[in-house]
Image 1: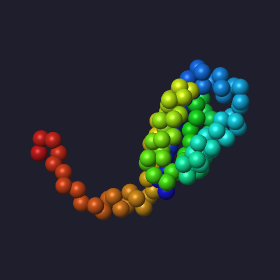
Image 2: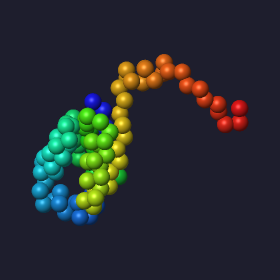
Image 3: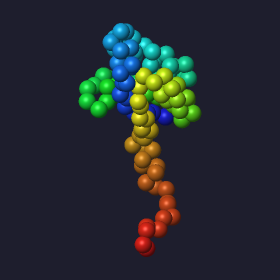
Image 4: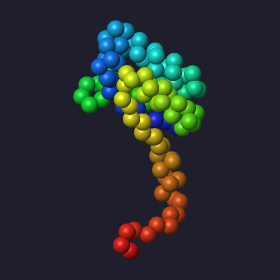
Length: 106
């Protein structure tokens, strides 16, 4: 199952929601949204700095990830970035593939 790193920062309106329902309420909302599309939350951390929330989630496919991302962004409560995560085995398989590439200027 594809795994994604999600980094999110709350908008002022989203922060008001977090203050009203607390971190556990927001985690429950995330788990519900993710599980509704067949995914699961592996880790959820709150932070401070550029990102307010960091998640690692599993989804059955990229379309499920895109659907949740669109719904969250449409809410206006968060700004998010999703990074696909690859296993060591996946990178090992990638290193064994032959790629025909010519560098600029060659």
